[in-house]
Length: 357
Ligand code: TRP
Image (cartoon, rainbow, N blue to C red; front, side, top):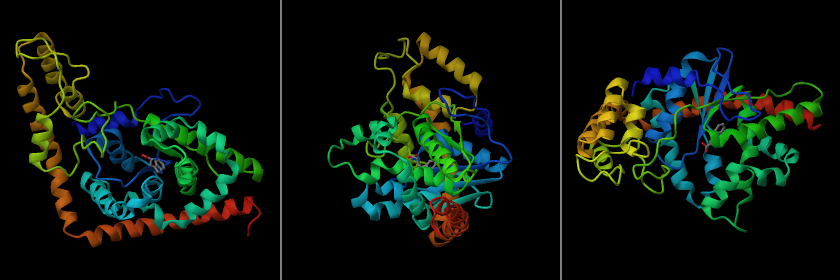
């Protein structure tokens, strides 16, 4: 991908569909927070959807936190604690491999900041069960996971915990996909309630920075997901990239090379849109594909070359850090310590609002 273009594009994302949440660009005064659940290694979709934008914002803003949200991961992976713990290192390695710089971006392990759990407990007193049940993202996730009476209370309440994440570090800007907008909305409601209770501004509301890039599909055309194994991890070996690109869903009606083909809904072109640095060349390729006379094999070969070249430097940086996992965990521990001091100050203020010493 033309990474630089993607990054600046991400910074200039216009507001869309954000309802009552102000969306905006990153400023030098901003404190930025984003997070990932460590439920598996990060993939190309994470790069397009958020890592590229984090690389850009770390150069611009006052401070950027990336949260490895292991506590949130446990809200629906309580029985897989060992795997979650394992993935913490993998996600941290992915951050370093793509070029997040610990000098500019603070890596935070959520479970290492118990102040966030205490903030969550206090915030839960201001959030109704009805409000949590109305959250469209939570509703969709409950449905997807098939939760019924077995719905973990922690899962229903994780948006309150996310409000603790956002406010705990005084974040002013939260770059997210559309599905996370309800979380920011809830967080800002908590901020308003706390400030009203306090009669003064104890917490700062956050703005959403909505990603403009369309979500990258899985290789089979379905939503990319760890459990389906249809995503291409950032840590993919060359052979895995080859195999996954060859298996990509194209246009099922494009049977012969001479047939006209569809570009929309064609996974190969979705990936080319995201990663091909030659926009004019890509337009021409699409025109030829639509017209007929261009085979899937040729298009896939082009994509494969582009993805191999994209992943190669990431792979090399990953290998360097991968040789010293203890150093990676020291980076995470140092960031977590720093973040904890900030969260402790927020907690002190919020405890005060509730009359706690
Ligand atoms: N819920 C987010 C996700 O699934 C992860 C996350 C946790 C997060 N805490 C956050 C994102 C705080 C932004 C801000 O992707």
